[in-house]
Length: 168
Image (cartoon, rainbow, N blue to C red; front, side, top):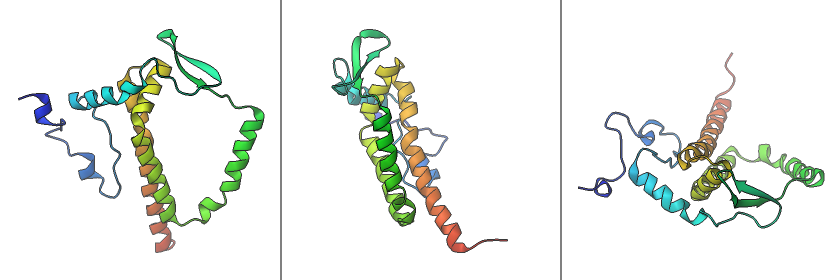
């Protein structure tokens, strides 16, 4: 029997997150010790290996382990572009608290879904920008959808508590 025949590794002792946290959609997660997961990550990161570059204009970002490897080009914010971004955020801010909590939860969960859809690119970018191993980058990147989904759950809980009234 091969590793591929066995399927993804699972602990015989610990429950999977989906069995523990039933009130939210759990992040996809990536089980780094599992050889099938590692193989899938390697395949997913493949298209972003050297000579792939993110962006076309701006400051050049080099791979620390090989300064001949251009990772990306980043447009740095100027005081004007930073001010414009803040202005757009301020303009959008009044709509957020006035929107229904259910709508905000859907938006937050959608952002988490989008992070997971492009995670391999994030893994590869983080590894090449920092010179870290991909497993370290997976651990960092997977926190974003986890925290977003956690915030969505807390928004629902806060709404439920508010609906129940104030306890004194």
